[in-house]
Amino acid sequence: VEAVVKAIDPKLTTADAKAFAPKMKVISSYSVWYQHIVNNHWGGNIEGPATAINGTVVPAGTKFDFWKVVGDVSRLPGVGPGNAIVNGRITVTGALGGGICTTSTTLFNAALDAGMVPLAKKNHNEYITRYPAGLDATVWIVGKAKQTMSFKNDTKYPILITRSVTNAGSKRWLTFRIWSVPN
Figure 1 (cartoon, rainbow, N blue to C red):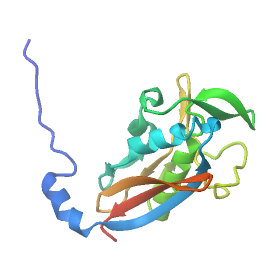
Figure 2 (figure 1 turned 90 degrees about the horizontal axis):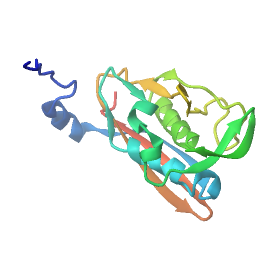
Figure 3 (figure 1 turned 45 degrees about the horizontal axis):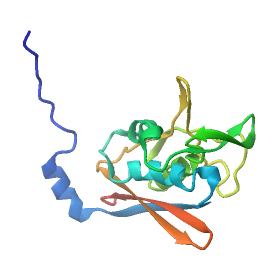
């Protein structure tokens, strides 16, 4: 049996990317601090997913979905057991990827500040003081159930997501920047 093959053009062509690139500027930046401690697997549960997201392009009119970009956290370097919120309380449970919500919350706020349209987002059951009230974005997978964070790029230009991690004493700062043609 011969396979049927159909070419599908990408939503963002190389020519378009080359035309947009020199015009792109940072349109949003958001940072959240965290400690480099065992509770987030020495930062790996934050930095691993942030690295997976780094360099993601979201074409105009398309959706960013946290889990579709990050994928299986067990395959990310540095990810391991950490804290989770269970029954409304922070607990040391050895949850794989515990602390990952620092990544989703930081990116959610950068996207919101850039004017992206929020689609899927849920707050934690407990208020975490280093996040803006009501603007945290929990993500989790338990069996086949999952909570994601997603947003839509409803502009006429692609966006590029970059991340950086900086040290400041006992704290580290995760920063997401959203690049696009200002509009």
